[in-house]
Image 1 (cartoon, rainbow, N blue to C red):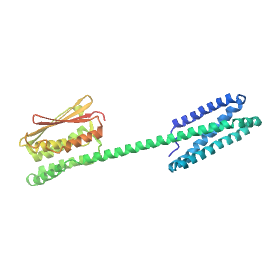
Image 2: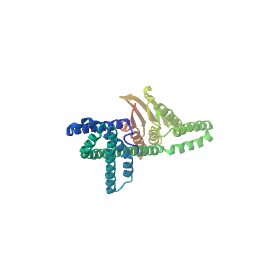
Image 3: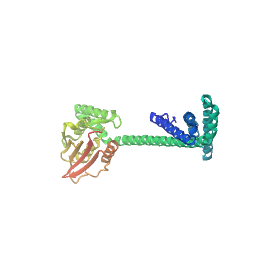
Image 4: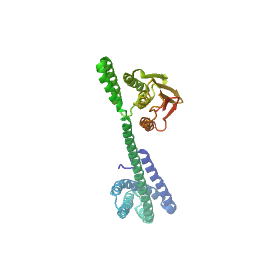
Length: 350
């Protein structure tokens, strides 16, 4: 662990301001207790606390080492007491030695030193105790920060894993059915089979080339979905009809890649596949109060299998929206007059 005081400039400034405050307090204490020594007490106090502060800065390294060793409480107390005795003793002795070198009246200073020794020891113990508390506070804050960072990384990993899992659940039957259709067309209509292979390759390239949950524009999603419809129209022919009503200002809205795909697969499965007549899938998009409101609707024949699915596609889309946007995006469904509608509310700003 790095030295907490030197980690950033603010802590370093606060550290020295705290020592200056202590120096002022100790100077006032000595002045009122020993007024005749005011000319000696000021440089003595400043020098003493300067030495003490440097020693306390150095003490962080053994303190942190013993703390990481997870020693028993008794050993920790012994280490702290020993460190305190050594630090305070060194401070007192170094202060006396240096002051005797610079003091003009050494006898007067010796007398001052002996008189103030009890106060030096007491204030040294008090300041040492405060510094140790500050170090424990630094360790606690650092551990808390690291814990939050680990939790954030874990949450991000879980979120990414879940998003990958949800995205991977694109209906594989679409690929199988497309390949079967291509196989049949190679005999009956080779040119159409070739077009379908090209569309399928472009569709799969889009699906596989995008990075996981990389936001893409609504325009890109629509272009890929049109490839999907071109492929499905080969299978279903006139049973499948599509229509779009898209406002221009919605096209650059960002969204998770292939977020709409399961909704169209549902429309195909529960609408077109079971129907004997034509099913129209309508895509509408407009801006409203900072949201892109995207509605996908399809008619269906009542009394068939509509609504009997597992709902996995809708659940996956809703879950991906929540993971990607949080509470900003939402989805709703409505069945009315043999028409099933899914509406997405996607924020214009991610």
